[in-house]
Structure formats: C-alpha cells, structure tokens
Length: 197
Image (cartoon, rainbow, N blue to C red; front, side, top):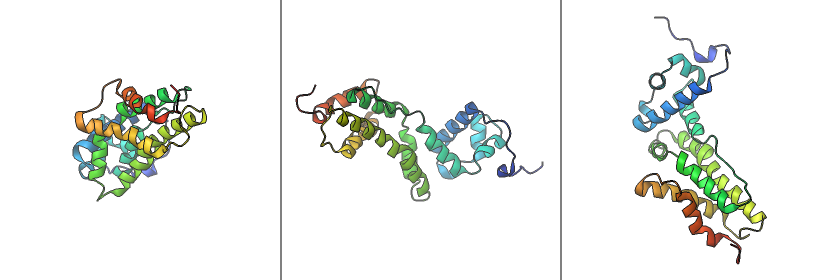
C-alpha cells in the first residue's frame, strides 16, 4: 500500500465542502469528550465522520489543530443582538449559551490542562472570552441608551450571567427553554436605572 502523501504538500483543489467540515468537527468534539485528547486520532475522527482519512488530513494536519478548530466551531453563529431592549438582548445571548455550550468539552479541556494547556487557552480565547464579550456589548448598549445604570460592573454581571448557565447545568443538566429569560428577570432590578421599568 503506497504511503499517504503529506497533506501540506497537496495542491489546492475544489473548495472544501462545509457539510463535510461540520461532520468532521462534530465527530472530533464527540471523540474528544469521550476519549480525551491522548486517545483521539485523525483516522478515528475520519471513521466517525464517515470520510476518508485524507479528507481530514487535508483540513487538519494535526490533532491539536483539529481540536482548536472544534473549539472555534462551538462558538460560530453566536448572536450579538441589538433590538433596543437590553433585557431581551441579554436573554438572547444567555439562551445561545444554554443551547450551544458543551459542558463536557469544557470539562475535558480542564482535565487536559496539565498536559496540553494550549487547548484550554484556545478555549478561553475563542469561546469563553467572546461569550463574555457578547454580554458586555449588550450591557454597554443598555448603558448608552440610559436603560441601565452607568456604574454597573460589566465584568461581574457578564460572569454572573454566563456562570449561571454552568452552575445550573452542573446542578440539574441543561436548562430548559425559558430559563434564560427567568435569570435575566431575576437580575434585572439590580441593573436598571432607578425608576425604570
């Protein structure tokens, strides 16, 4: 059997199929959570995704690159709404986290921190910080409109909102639809300008 070519030596061909890429990243995320980084292989991901090994190697020459792409994939399509209502926008951002954040991946990244700190650092940079920044952006817009108090600690509120998802998940599993709105409603009186509704 001839040796497989080095993926980096391949010449550009047809554009990469986004459906195939999604299948690879989904399979990689599942394998990462189930087996951990040490037991994750590109051929194994290819088999789980139902594609040829060369298809994976052409996109991701190493397992580290594949995991980093998987982390970024988890954060794609995240909304930064601006409807004119900070309350509605905060609920929208929190509901995105409820639907899309995979706590299993976060746990695996923490478990791998000693051997592969670059993976957790990538998750912070590509997933956690952008998630917190979406809350900060909505809060700043609310302050600029005079809807929210100007003296709010944006970091503390962003941490409280995103942190509420992780703690709720750990206590009783992924929250149900409507949960995000309830969390924002509970915190809302502490955020608004006195006398505002």
